[in-house]
Length: 141
Image 1 (cartoon, rainbow, N blue to C red):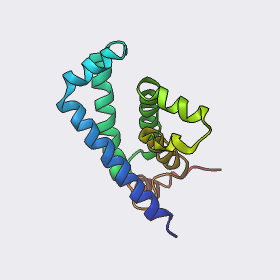
Image 2: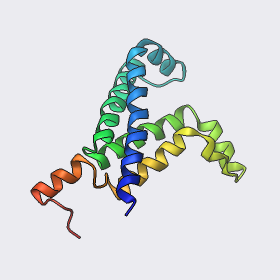
Image 3: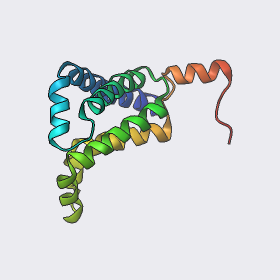
């Protein structure tokens, strides 16, 4: 009964966070590209543009619930790459200590919520649901 509201709230919060982060990355594109170069990410200017675009478009898709599962997988991939590139030491330290500190790393929480959206979908209040209902394209099991 509450699942549609949980999906809506998750989509809105996570989608908005990605959308805003993507806009900020677009606004500070050169700084982001230089940062990527400083942590040895290849083709930093191209990578910065791709990451910013994915976050803006993916965040918008989550907000309206359009292609939610696909958007969530792509955004989770970007977050996992960020974890490996930027937060690797923090995550490895949390894993080694066998402590719940891994949940203090914000990108890990984002990935967890995105995987929830991949698993359960956009919910009743979404473009996905309206589209599937109109064309009766529900996944068959």
